[in-house]
Length: 319
Image 1 (cartoon, one colour):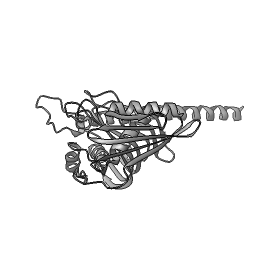
Image 2: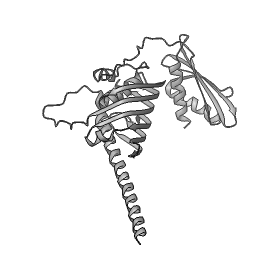
Image 3: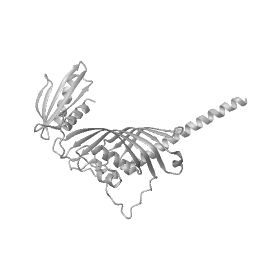
Image 4: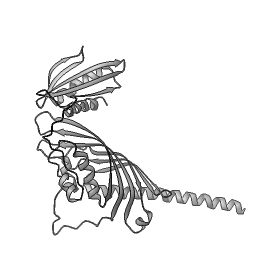
């Protein structure tokens, strides 16, 4: 009888600990989401969140920050994975000390609207606004310290609707893996992520560069006057038939500019966007696969970012 009672008590304790763990996961997920909203001023969603007491780790999956008010309700920053090691003793003192963190950033989508405004400049931490005297002061944020940050960045997509009737779309494949030390605030972390994503692009007017400098992040944008010499094309293979690939390419070119020539039999499309000549070639590799190559040039100079932008637009239509 005594053994039976011990088993019942053990089962009860395990169930209780499991319930508390689930409660903590939900609670901390809410805290993380609220903190991200407070810093960005935009809608934030997290697909899944797990909190492991045994190895002092936090696992976040599918963190998405949406465009701020005034822009389409689309994802601005897509972070599929975040891994964090935390200091429990610091948490008990209401301090956030992370000995190590790793962030996998898949994509940043920068939009310039018809009025020339950038979505990234409308994020709360990018604004240089002073609080009004009568306004209620925001609650003091929990002290934060990240000893070592590993940041992996995929690509930046730039859609410019200010250039005319047709938008300009460019894709910058950043593909960097960098390590940083001593991050001391949420604003510094947010500005670092965004400024590091944009600094290898030719996107001008992003106020986050100034915010990053004030926050102690030494990153500067690349000058737009620099000339990129190299291959003028972007290529990708798609799991789709030739008919669909050709149609998607034709629609993408029509949306981004003007179609000069199109030949379905040879899979050849020639167009023009923002004064740049674009050539799209579609090749059927198998019955259900097609290879699409986009090349772009202006005055004989290669424009690989425009080529990647057109290819990206095609890939969106083939989703």
